[in-house]
Image 1: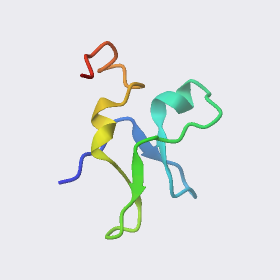
Image 2 (image 1 turned 135 degrees about the vertical axis):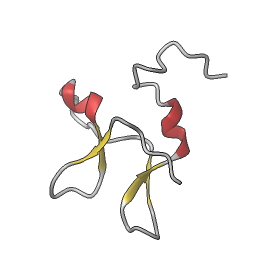
Image 3 (image 1 turned 180 degrees about the vertical axis):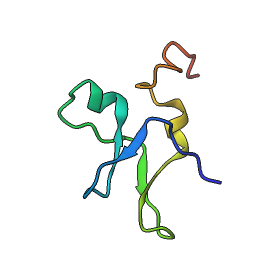
Image 4 (image 1 turned 90 degrees about the vertical axis):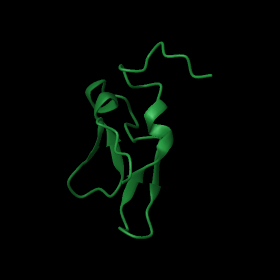
Length: 65
């Protein structure tokens, strides 16, 4: 099963994934940085790197080495 970030969301009429945290912070480009176009579902899906996204509050301060 593919990993899905708990902060990734879709907006009606848009195909890209958005980051809820960036949307709430009113950032100019609130797109999820960890997405790819899946050839099977034809939708933008999270990559495995989204587990370690530095925007996520649950991993801020986590050692990324």
